[in-house]
Image (cartoon, rainbow, N blue to C red; front, top):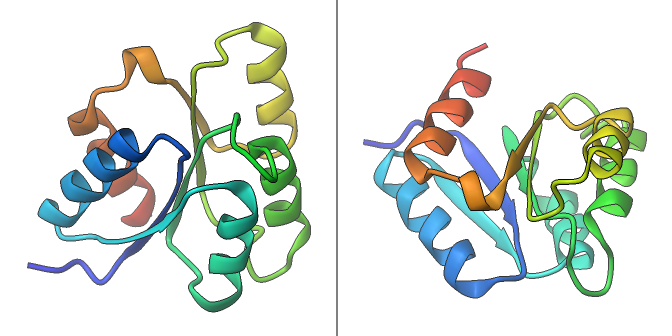
Length: 125
């Protein structure tokens, strides 16, 4: 059962990226993956997702830069962005929020089931 909703997963950890992809696909979403921030921006040129899951610490282009570019682009600025990061410092959370993150999850507290629930809430709005 496909929801027809596309989710971009921008995550450099291949095990976590794959686990999130599998969980989303089982929930009926179409998962688009990017291994770094530059790939995420490239994906956005051809695949406009319904939600973006964004790591902050990635090679080539970090998540903060990706978030700025997403919010600056008229085609992507309204897409909900869930930041999933190991950066748990208040400054990092505040910076991501200021740049336009819709939600912020600390990876060590990440439950894939909760992530799917959050995504489902965003796409049903």
